Length: 419
Image (cartoon, one colour):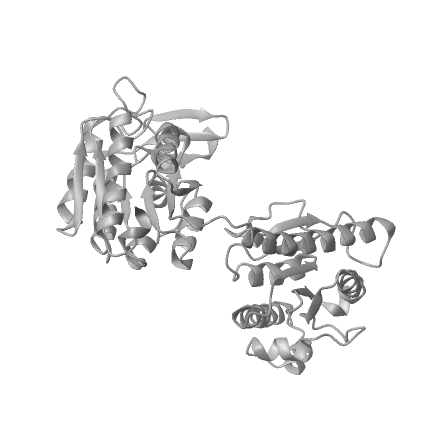
């Protein structure tokens, strides 16, 4: 007999029990099996959940009695967050989880967000929250988490909240049902290539996407804005990406210089670690991204800037900075356990770096290239192209080189996967 689809509902039942029960009943009427998880510590729940607050606290390495007695809200939040993460992770590992809905205010949203960020991309995730009208990046991170604004506080069951909660239940139900339909649509799987893109490399990215899709490959484009780079690295580690055309590594200058679009210190590591084919180009390495002009740190007074738009001030990287960045790229590629190549566009790293452009600086570009080549090692194929990154000669060569690496490199399923 086919297993009923299961949706977990997370809430602090001491304060949100009435609303969790309302959602539970709606989902059960829709035919789902519902697992309720109690992350509260303030009082007894109004009904018996499937996973009790005592079990959640224990899974988080704590004791509920001690948490209640200590009256330390921060410590309790940390334990219940760890516990909820552990419970969700275990349910998913056992194949008993098809979707998750959480609801809450600040604490409940923090707990649920941490748990949902542990789930792979594609698993339906939704939070009904009083925090959804604000910056939700601390809760969503890089994951495909949907946020629904509760409009009113999540207390009682007033007419507006009833409708919002019903919408939330309908949304998660629809996500779970559509996930099953998508898995059964009959489309044969194709190799997936990740491409990084930025406004000043978009011409190149669009051309690479077109060329790859003409050859029968799926493409995933990631905006190199910090979140995009982290999401790509996570998907590579998850095994959802077969090869990488890392066309835009501009998040590295932001990491070095304190720009607003850093992807953190581990950018350009996942593909090397997992051994999937990768071709890297220094797209937009000529710039660091800051906010409006008044947000640029004073230590950069006197540097070359360009106002890209009212909210973004670009700063040209120097030869000294590019030497560091070149070493970073070369060293990370040198650790690749699979086929890797570095393409160096000799006539510019971005739309602004070409001859006549505001950031044209061959000396700075050459500093990057020389540093990268010096440390890349014999395992990395280095190709210099007498073109700018957005030129057809460069994009065509990048695609052909990636496919060459993929068909000759060690891939799961063999080279035939890429024919």
